[in-house]
Image (cartoon, rainbow, N blue to C red; front, side, top):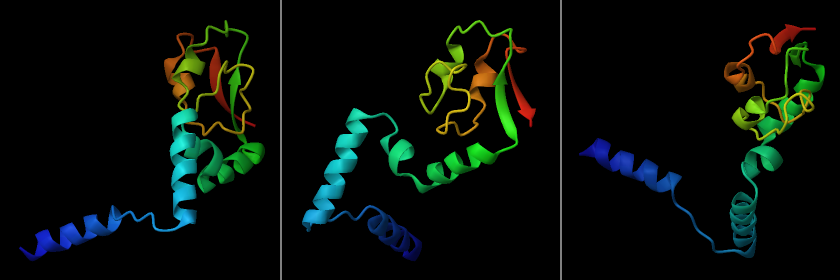
Length: 117
């Protein structure tokens, strides 16, 4: 019985949501509106981890590169969880989190590769 009550209190704390101030309503409205208008709004514009990854993308020795075998079919762009369109042109995008879904979905294994340097 105690565990159930303790679990309920934790869930109540986690999901307790009060909009009592103008600031809270403003944040709520911006997040809701942004999420309805832009896919992955939080991840693309507000997430601190994405900002760190963007900086690390600039200096990372690991690169995703397209080769001559790429026919620009667009499969990698449609598989991209970050919504980076037309992958060959945006291969060095700061939004890329190197999930490697583009490598997994490519029908031509020699078209995209992960390289050091």
